[in-house]
Image 1 (cartoon, rainbow, N blue to C red):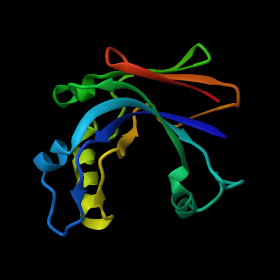
Image 2: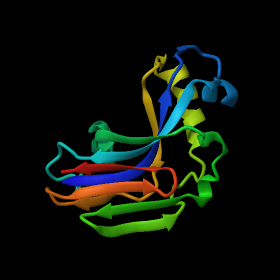
Image 3: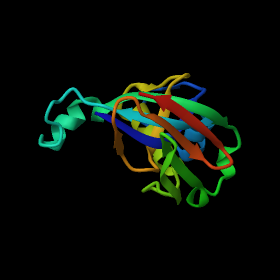
Length: 162
């Protein structure tokens, strides 16, 4: 099984140590540097993953196998997230070509929430970590040997072969 999701990934450039007090949006975003075009590679160790209880998938690292990071998006704070055009092309065939697609619409909201959660519940955040905020393309499965390209039109792209 090879699954692909086109995402936006954010790069943490400043540590925030674990604490019990909330991390406000401004503090959370000050810890973030560039955003990146990303492609989550989804795989599982479960032979019958389509039939198992969803909690098994959670225990299987939510089926995350890898994150492929593409080009940097430096001026991400002012983007019209809902208006971004996302494409997923596999072996030269366009699978997704749409405006928007992220369930949360604005990835900055879950980004700030995840930073606060990590600081208060998971031991903090560290410089060099990446945070992804969900799929814009939906989860798409492809056979071995496929070549995938995810793109946010005008912002950058990421490619991977399987």
